[in-house]
Amino acid sequence: MTSLRAVALLLVCCVVLPALAQEAPSPPGDEYRVRVTEEMIRHSRIRDILYFAGFLYSVGVLVFVLMTKTSARLRDASTRVTRKPFLLSMVYVALLIVVVTLLELPLSYYGGFVVPHQFDLSNQNLAEWLIEQAKGLGVAVVLGSFVGALVITALRKAKRWWLTIWIGSIPLMILLVVIAPVFLDPIFNKFEPLKDEVLRRDLLSMADRAGIGGSRVYEVDKSKQTKTMNAYVTGIGPTKRIVMWDTLLAKMTHDEVLAVMGHEMGHYVLHHLWKGLAAAIAIAFVVLLLAQRVYERGVMRWGRRWDVSDKGDPAALPWLVIIVAVLMFVLSPVSAGISRAMEREADKFSLELTRLNQPMATAFIKLAEDSKVNP
Image (tube, rainbow, N blue to C red; front, side, top):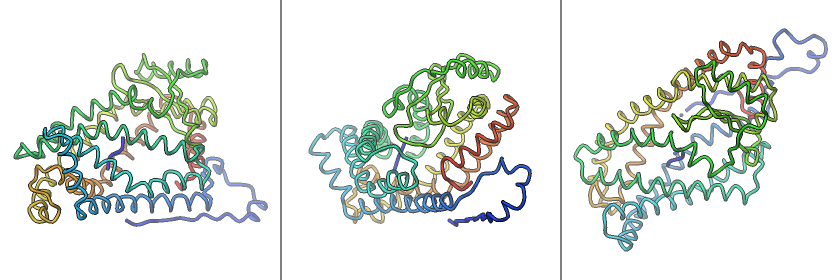
């Protein structure tokens, strides 16, 4: 789920002369190589620029909200709705999310609508895209206002508020993983049991061999949004499920689907979800510990300029978000390294489980070429 969002770019251009291709046969293994095109390189360059520009733009929006005292005005507007501290904080956070979303809309529109259409990766028209953005905003307001109010309460009441927030974040993260497949994901897409009975039988048999029996297999109508492919295993306990995008089912063979899902099952069996949560909790510990010192010093130094009275003032929340966002950005290579290690483990698990070496290779090629990203 989204919240408010490292520095060199390396591009390798591979050019194959048609004349050479005609004169000599392709070397062994060429069928297992991604055909890197100029379009893929250009798409990757845009995505990389948007990653860095998006971070800077989001931080800039929050700085603007503070420096122009927009945050203070939102707090004052909230006090006219209610004087009860927790409810006041909820109203303030809801208003802040709406304002920040609107200010970030131009870049969101370019990166989320214009670029995918430029590279023929989207099936959405503008109205459909806007409706989906509105749904996302609604979810962010409902969840974010409550969580944000809890954070503001900790800032106001706890001396070591970083520790209170960190401890409180742990059950919230676990709860989100449990409820997202059942309550949040269906807001955006329709999930229904896999229609291909043969594939369903083979997937369930493979899941049994992998040690995750009792799983439910779903297909989701992602083709209404995108032309790219994906699949995943998600949920905990009663919400555990195997999910495949309908685009993947349409573009891959039976064995390629099994190989991809073997990879996804590997994530589940190898407890990557829990390991990822543990890594996120550890990173949050460091980030929040550092954030307390920077946050309180910033409020003391610039609070009057922002029309912020003290560390527990709701109007200071954008400052905390800036600090956390910058620290998370700096630590993003750590998160990426952990993710890459897990992906390699899942690849190995799939090969050992399925023995579908060739279909797995061709599936990975399709995934790379279909997304038009330079691997």
